[in-house]
Length: 477
Image (cartoon, rainbow, N blue to C red; front, side, top):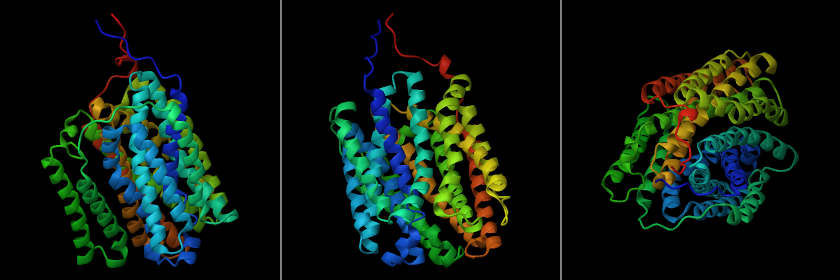
C-alpha cells in the first residue's frame, strides 16, 4: 500500500514569486549594463576590447560556477545556498556601483556572477521541492519561472536605458540591493528546508571549468582583432578547450565529483541540455543585436529602444504562462521543443532581412514576435525535461547543469555572433548599411544555431507522454 504524498506547502506560491524574482534578476543583470557601457567606458577608462568584459566577467563567473552552486545546494541545502547567493549578489552590486577603476568594476561584476551561480541552481531546486510531486502545478510553476527569464532580459535593457538617461550608471548595479533585501527578508518564512548531507566539494574542478570557459570566450571575442587564422586565436582557444577537457577528466576520477558523469546516462538529459545551450546561443545574440539595430540604425534612444522590445516580452510571458503548459499537456515536450526552435530560427532569419532604412513596424515587430513564440514553446519543455531526468537527490546538480548549458550557450553564442557581425561590417559605426550587414550576418548565424538545436532535439529526445497521461501525485490504494 503506497503512502500519500506530503501535503503541499501553503506558502508555495509566495515562494514561487521569490524564485521567479531570482530568475528575473540574474538574467536582468546580463542585459542591464548594455546601454550604460559608453558612460562607464568614459568614467572608468575602459579600452574598447576591455569593455566587453563588463558583460563577460558576469556571464563567465555565472556559467562556470553553476555546477559548484548545484553541488553546494545538494550538500548544504538549497535554502541556505539561496540566501548565500543573494548576499554575495548584493555585495558584488555594491562593489560594481562604487568602483573607481576598471579592475574593481570587473571584480564587482564577477562577484555578481558568483552570487548568480549560487542563486540559480538553488532556486530551481527549491521549485522542484515545492512542486515536483504535483505535475500539473509543476508545469504552471515552470511556466512562471521560464517567463521571468525573457522578462528579466528585456527589463534589463529598458531599465538600463531609463537609469542611464535619468540617473547615473552605478544605479544599474545598486538596483539589485533592495531586491536582495526583500528576498532575504521573506525567504526564511516561505522556503522549504533540507538537511545538510555529507560529502566533499570539488573546488579545483570548479576553478578549472571556469577558467577554461573564460579562456574560450576570450579567444572568440578577440578573434576579430587577432584574426581567425592567427596562431594566438587558436592557441588560446585550444587552451580553453583543454582546461574544459581536464575538468571532465577530473570528474571521471573523483569519488565525489562536482558533476557525476553517470548522470548523462539519464534519458533525455543530454538532449534537453543541448536544446537549452543552442537556444541560448541563438536567443541572446538576437536581442543583443536587435537592440543595437534599433539604436544605431533606426536611431531610437535608450528609452525608446527598451520600449520597442516590450511587445516581444509581453508575448513571451503570455505564451509561456498560458499557452505552453496547455500544449505540453496535449502534445508532450519533444514536439514543442523541435517546433519552438524551428520557429525561433525562422524568426531570426526573417530579422536578417532588416533594412538600413527600415522601420520598427515592418522590419522588427513581426519577426521578433515569431522568434518570441519559438522561444516560448521550446524553453519550458526543455527545462522541465532536463530537471525531471535526474534523481531527486541530484536536483541541485541537474539545476546546475541546465543553467550552465544556458549560460555557456549565452556566452559562446554572443561571442561567436559578435565576431561574425564584426567580420561582415558592424565595426563601421555611423554607416547604417555596414551596421545592418553585420547585424544581418549575426541573425543568420543565430538562426543556424537554432535550426541545429531543432535537429539535435529531434534526434536525441525520446518521445514522452503528455501531461494528461503522465503519472500524477501518488494516491493511497
